[in-house]
Amino acid sequence: NNFIVVAKCIAHEMKHLHQYIVVAEEPNHPLREKWLNNMANPFVVTNYDDVDQLSEYSAQPLEVDAFSYQYYAVNKFFGLDLCHPSEWYDMLLKFHAEKYFLK
Image 1 (spheres, rainbow, N blue to C red):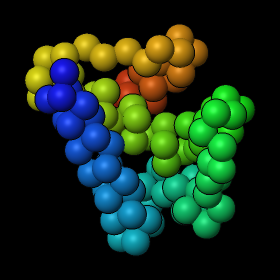
Image 2 (image 1 turned 180 degrees about the horizontal axis):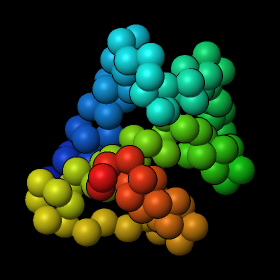
Image 3 (image 1 turned 90 degrees about the horizontal axis):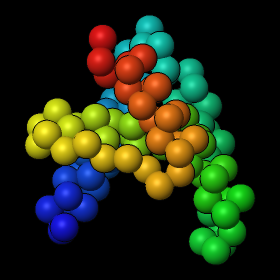
Image 4 (image 1 turned 45 degrees about the horizontal axis):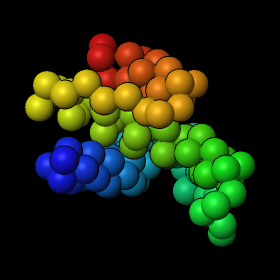
């Protein structure tokens, strides 16, 4: 469904904007240092057929937070439960959401 794809994309990219604002303006945010380090040394995928590269990219603190937020936001605002095809990554996203978004 195109609506779900667009909603996920908007939530994900808006979370990246939020991360940049936090790094610039909130020195006491619990994830600030991880995000700042990730921004300074991002992993960039050079081969989208390489599962190891995609896994490393997806495991970066900025991406875990943004992917987790997109699932949280789509559920909160549209009542849709999403899950990642990778069971371990889905568990990671849900754990992150519980720790940082569902307080």
